[in-house]
Amino acid sequence: MIRNIAAALVLLASPAFAQTAPPQEGPVTCASPVAPDDTERSLKQRFGKEAVVEDLPGAEGEKYKGVVLFPKAMDRRIEVAFTDDKAKRASGLTLRDTARTSRWNVSGVTIGSSLAEVQKANGKPFMVSGFEWDYGGFVTDWKGGALVRPLQGGCTVTIRFGKNAAAPKSLLGDGVKAASDNAALVKWAPVVTEIGVNFPDK
Image (cartoon, rainbow, N blue to C red):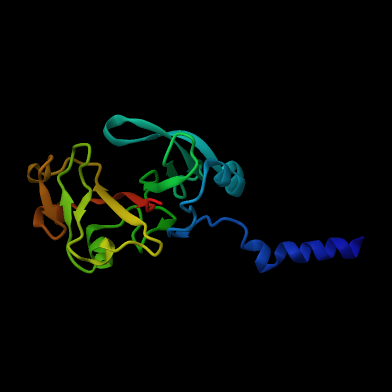
């Protein structure tokens, strides 16, 4: 009996068993910690109580039902959206600025990353939309940099900047675009407040 218990403990401690536990931090890819074929059910099976259904913020004030991973750990929180109301296939995931930074990163970019850090990851300047409207602060053009390329598996990345302070008038509104090395934008110094990883259609 004691020998059987010891064998069980060795199995639990083995790398093969440990690999079945889902990651709690690190790089986000097209396959981890969420994959395109994930469903509400599969996420709940894999993450247990760390996967809950919530109403999530959508475009223009709309709400949609999704699954939140690590809902009580603000620096680990991931919001998962689905292609339909039955949550049969994940359409993508979102990291938001629910904490000062995130334990997750996408291509080296994380919540709280600066303009300069994202520009370094991209390899060149990029364009950002004007602020303080529904789609304000999103990167609109990577200008052929590294971040325009899909991740392995075909996922595309969206990044949004913001700051808890009013933007200069020259950076406000729909129709306004500014380069990441624009003097007014650099001086205002927004940071990454949202990262989306969008899965390819089947």
